[in-house]
Image (cartoon, rainbow, N blue to C red; front, side):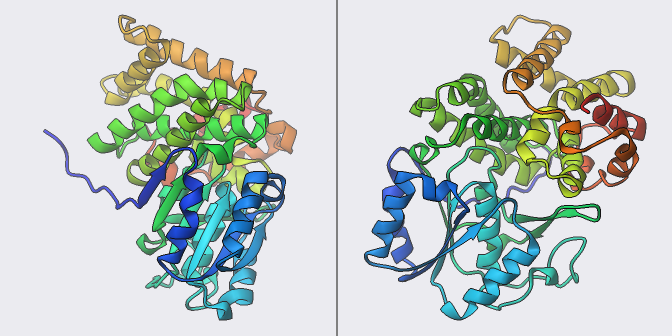
Length: 393
């Protein structure tokens, strides 16, 4: 019997090399005035992005804003205040996950000029967002967060009292997404690796999630095949367009699966870690995934040995080894071995590199039980969550 489930709407996705060339035509379906949201320097360093910007400026009225690092609520509010009277017909985010998240929030707030603190989950005023949102087009240039396919914009304040919270609503979903692997060719190896481990984590966590369903399972399996076949090549041979395309597909698919099935303990911990310390999100995922998966499997075997997630971990182990005769225990161990090997191969930094110490563990654990931890396949105990952090210091 298939359980009841809800699958959120998805935008129009335009996938393939050269698809960035249709951006102007898509924008013109909304009008001529565009607010372009980019990263701080990667956009300027890319010849393809520069040529695209110049082409847009020939027939459109384009204003550009830059997002340096992970977007904060204050940055979003500043940009909205400065450009509210521009009356943009469309917002385009062209960049990594930070540009996409910022663009999504900016598009949602431009018509009203409201502060994002009116709507930000957990730290805002609790006002219900009613829209409308400015039409939004997402053009990712990294393959990691999959944020282009989701309805939430993640905003951060980093520090001792920091937070990572979402501005979330169906109206924020992009009208169009352009997935062009050519735009990811300039992404450096270290960022490609961190982003790739983020996509891997999202697909794996959503596949074993407490809230999984047949649609998200099928999407996650599809994305994980491309992780298996393309991640190492994309990192180590950045000019490999096929590998870049596979990772872009896997990343965007992970955005759909996380939005509909939820995540798990890695992302539960990534929220306080990314709020309290200046750790790139993909690095958190790459650093934690082995220990978090190992402890999940251990806890499931000890407390719920019939849980379907145990079989799912084994299924992914057989998928990655391409050995479909392997027994469940061996398959799970093989999956853990691959995750550990990739984390080492990609030089994922320990948490201590970013200032995390034993003294921080209790505070991190206390702030880890948000939405993502709620869909972990098994409820982890505090000492188990502490062990994940301690072993990753």
